[in-house]
Length: 384
Image (cartoon, rainbow, N blue to C red):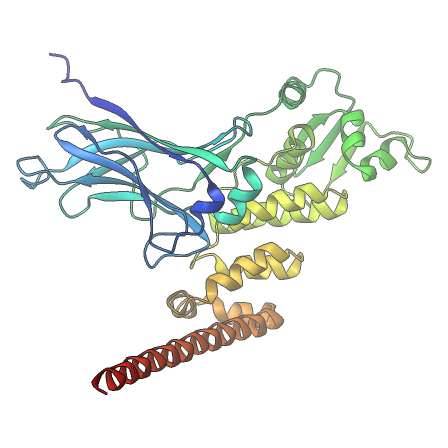
């Protein structure tokens, strides 16, 4: 017998003004209109300044299930779903950010899954061109007794966000040119792997390549170039940027490999005079700032003068909870040895944050005292 059909629906939220939405306090949210699917009510919650108690520099997105009386979750049974969350630009182009499809098991205990750090506010402002955007959630609810094929399992802290922007027709054509190698007139050997490319494209993108291939000091034979101080994956990403003006996804499944790729790209950006490559790589790293990565990110930011990344890292450390969690790792001593100046910046940030909190607390106490005194004065005058 064929399996019973799944219930599928799409939930949406239209945010009319990003600038107005960001004025909401941390923990305040927009919610979509509830939709009944598979015997339960579902909503999408959007927190412009982060979920309650979360990091305020990020936007949070969650799928919520209302545990209905008589439903499977109320009876102690898991409700298996697949869902994807997406932010799409409206009016400024076809840009969008997406979580990709994830699988989750909702229950009475776990009735909310999503992304505390779906996207940083700073990256959002750089990425989208319009003040208006739509949040879309595609949801599939599986019938009792069945569940989705093994997939990425959603968790309170789910998989890495994928940010995608469709390539222009020119970049798409150039990407095909790189893939097919048609008309290629130069080969690069990097770590034993050979890459074919086009001198004219590289020269148009980089003044350094232009000088190497067509300048007065160029070598006689420039059809074969050997590069010995870069990983093949990094050079492939460099070529991808040169042809498409974008950087491939920088997954941090292996922190060491991800950091090595980022460092290679930052070095290449300086070597070949590619300011946009440095900016894109820095933005990618900003989206991976967390307790387990923060100290490595700080070291990279200090070594390669990435001001935006360093500012985000220090802001993250400013949270007392984050600071204690970071200090519990074994990487603090390594950072102190390799980048002692960064440690000074970290301590300064923590002290400044505490000082600012103390000032706010003192002000609040003064205001409360003045308010109580006013009430007392009015009470006395009223008796007279």
